[in-house]
Amino acid sequence: MPNTLEATIDIAAPPERVWQVVSDFKRMPEFSPHTVRMVPLGKPKAGTWTVNWNRDGKKYYPTTSRIVRYEPNQAFAFRMNENFTVWSYTLEPTATGTRLIERRDVVNGVSWPVRKAVDAFLGGEQAFETNLVAGMNETLGKIKTAVEAVV
Image 1 (cartoon, rainbow, N blue to C red):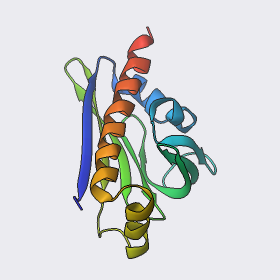
Image 2: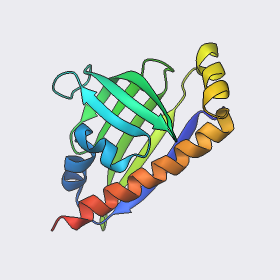
Image 3: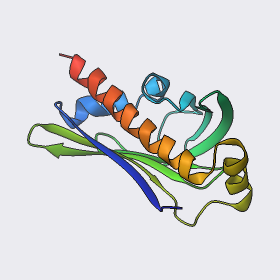
């Protein structure tokens, strides 16, 4: 399994405006085709837990995560408790606005039960990861549209 999946988009807005949208976890279902709900258990900051409801096509499944990085206007990341992957959003200022990078990092691989569940219920690792990358690109495109619509 690849260690990193990544998607990037340039947005014609300053990092502060991008941050307002991307760090609003309640809006994540508006952008991500895989997120039905993401609820932080407390004020978002490093150490805050989240409870999530996800989907892959018509299949729904719950997950939990912990925010491991939260730097306003720069980046946030959360570690999934079930499969130990780390998802992150990084904002980089550019001459015309902000480059937004979404990543999924697998530091030490996923556990055997998670691999078997992906194979059995989500079409196998390759299909699942292809779907994740497509979802990442869709998410970033929708975030770009939302941010740039604000005048």
